[in-house]
Image (cartoon, rainbow, N blue to C red; front, side, top):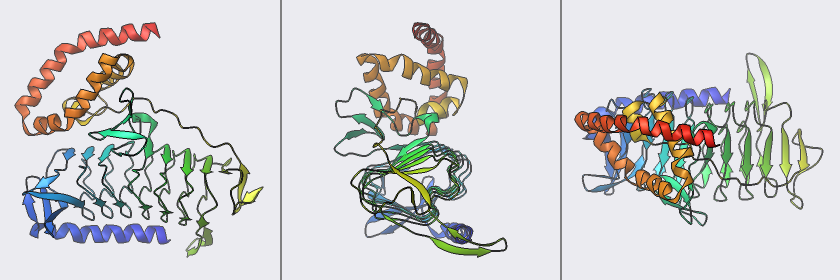
Length: 381
């Protein structure tokens, strides 16, 4: 199948890219290349699972993450991409199976093919996107009034809002991202590539704006949990391909093998759709999905670096943030301050075991009081 061939091709290219990193420039834990006074990250040689990509190297801005830069680095768990980066290449995080969280800066204009393919643990992509709805603070979105913290997605909720600066989604970009449960696509997107979200088996909903004019074949195939696709504008073109293999020949369409109750939902007055079926799928006029505020549930790399992703202490601190701090203006300010300085603190902790040990001792001493407040909060609910 074309899908398998494309993934194999991406992997082969990735091996060639990795073999060339020995000749790349080195800065700390990153290999890089320079062109036109700007830096492209080409590889990572560090051993930490928490990675903060610098915005400047050797007095030059870091504008791109090169193809396959983090390909198959299976110990990666948390990656922060700075605002300086405008493009993320092909297969950058391909087969990073332990990667759970990525923070994307607000300047990214393109995300390449297969960027997050086979990232089977990916449940959290925090987007720093400055637009008419949100203002940004260090990779975390806030309402304009800066009182309600919103993260995309929310921890175990696994939703993902794509930055409004991105105009197209590449082939295989999020295939096999089993942690994703919902996707909101902004009005900046005009095309969705082949197999872009294929095999996202826990994806339950997707909203496609009127800006999208074409969707590639297999874009949402084998999304077993997908029950509805909401189209907010006129019908886009839906690509199909006729593929043959040792098991026979078949058409590959956009939404094949989704939930048995899968339905195409479109708005009244839109053109190009047909009922009761469209492209062979059940189709009907539906109410436009309501936008809801995502629960605060994504912590940051700093706490995870000290205690681990799913440790008892990390879960307790998340609960303290969600059920105690978020309930008062003072607590909300504490959350904002934490996120504001978290990238800098994480970088310091990563490079200083002594400082990390001291930070842990301080937080350990606070945990009994935090646990008591969480328990009191739970009783009052």
